[in-house]
Amino acid sequence: RHHHPVAEMLDLPFLPFCVLLGGLGFVCVAFVSAWCQHWRGGFALDGSTRTFNWHPVLMVTGMVVLYGAAALVYRLPPAWSGPKLPWKVLHGALALAAFSLAVLGLAAVFRFHNDHGTPNMYSLHSWLGLATILLFSCQVGA
View 1 (cartoon, one colour):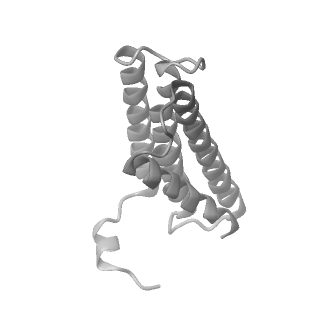
View 2: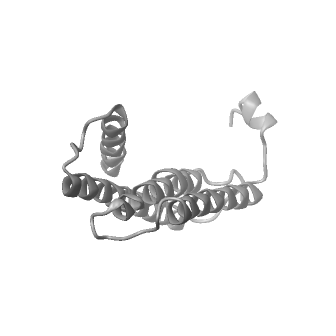
């Protein structure tokens, strides 16, 4: 097995690294949720600005935290000698949950835009975001 010098330099224990990343992900989602709740008026499903507030929370949770966790789970610890199937199932479940939340985040922003007469694909953020989700969806067959 060939070791890359950077990999040897960054040889962090797998479980503490996972716990650290999970904690940072939780804090990230908590901060975005608190921002939307406190400074943006909270959450609703009525087409108001509060409907839009679901977009950042769902996108951060799905595209950043859960997809990050899925990628981390895909890379098994080097010392793992047990069956890989449970890890693959967990990887797939996390990726599916992440994709589902991203689709719900898109639905929230599209509903808000449609209810307010705002064009849906009017910014670079819109186009890059949609392209990102489409590219992530291509991984299903891979």
